[in-house]
Length: 150
Image (cartoon, rainbow, N blue to C red; front, side, top):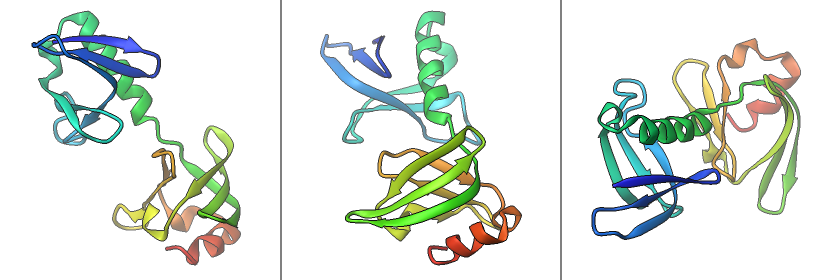
């Protein structure tokens, strides 16, 4: 198996010499086994390969996977909800995050998932995850806008 960087994605040349394009790494057990069981999946979510242990890869290959994982693990934290506007295929959320203001679209209410307690994750149409670590810590206006969906 040989991994290559191709822009924001990875490419894989498997043992049979077949090249798999536009792969992204997914940690199967991100909290309990962050360095083990990493699936390389294509755009349709089909697994092309499974890395049982990152430390078994050579330094260059491991570095490619770790960099791709770091890009994927990026989770902006929502600090304030400015406005939520209805769109033809969902809702556009205008928010302020720890990385600055942004706009994203969610398709359905199922895009907002509880992580237990008052923690929420919002998954936008592009698959980016946004974290609200504590709904109660949001300002009153943001909480009121969120009530309709949560």
